[in-house]
Amino acid sequence: MIPPALLDRLRQARHVVVLTGAGISAESGVPTFREALTGLWARYDPLELATPEAFARDPELVWNWYAWRRELVGQSRPNAGHEALAGWPARFPRFTLITQNVDGLHQAAGSREVVELHGNLGRVRCSGAGHPVPDWQRLDGAPPACPRCGRLLRPDVVWFGETLPAAALQSASEAAADCDVFFSIGTSSLVYPAAGLVEDALGRRAIVVEINPAETPLTVHATFVLAGPAAGILAELTAHLAEQDG
Ligand code: BV8
Image: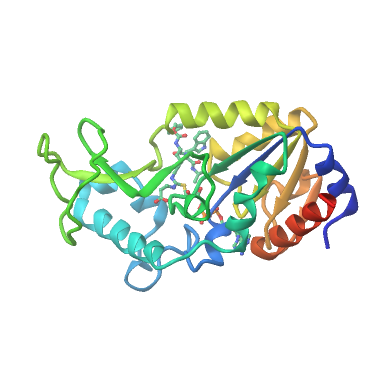
């Protein structure tokens, strides 16, 4: 059930921002970050593995964790939530989609402009100079060497303790500071600076909508809380918006 008051606010919205986390990909079968350690990975802590220290200590282990996740993502398809959001740029005067996810499913659903705060595990880069390496051999086992300088290749994602891509963080911060509606979808709101974006919106009395089956530190501050899985809620919300088109 979508609150009519939310639909009214969306009808008048000037700039809608959406921040997504791993939860929006859960219904595509991509485990959320904390679930991304099942089976042989169950004994590791993602906060430990997703760090430059872990890669320096055991590059093969970290490389293979990402190879396994890349495999999972490769077998996944965007769900109704990704697809609904792909149509939202046409519904609002201004729309910004920001994601913490590294699975590329928003782009696979047709979203053309996606602010990727934490990179994308479909890309790799040189662990030395940082330049992207588009055509690399997909080997299991030890990470391949950079064809240019011989240093190890690494996933093009942001690890804990690493700064976010400056351009992405700036776009996200500017959008959060300008928007009049901020959606936080499928994120535990625990990881910074991504989780801090909504604070800009709250500070300016923008409408904040949280879509998540569980409570998070944001829940008590949100204007509207749509408690449930994102795919169905976003499909229902989009259907209401389409009704307004007459
Ligand atoms: C940095 C890529 C400068 C890798 C990831 C304050 C300011 C700045 C930094 C910090 C700070 N406090 C602490 C820090 C350090 C740290 C941090 O935030 N630590 C946390 C643990 C406290 N931040 C950093 O290190 C960042 N770097 O700021 O640099 C700096 C450096 C050092 C010290 C100070 C400053 C870098 C953070 C980026 C890390 N990389 N991902 C990879 O994926 O392998 S973050 C990773 O974890 C994910 O991208 C995601 O964003 C995050 C959380 O993962 P999950 O919990 O799985 O996913 P999510 O949060 O999205 O939760 C799932 C949610 O979905 C749940 O709520 C669930 O209920 C819901 N859900 C489930 N099913 C559904 C659903 N929702 C809807 N529908 C469903 N069907």
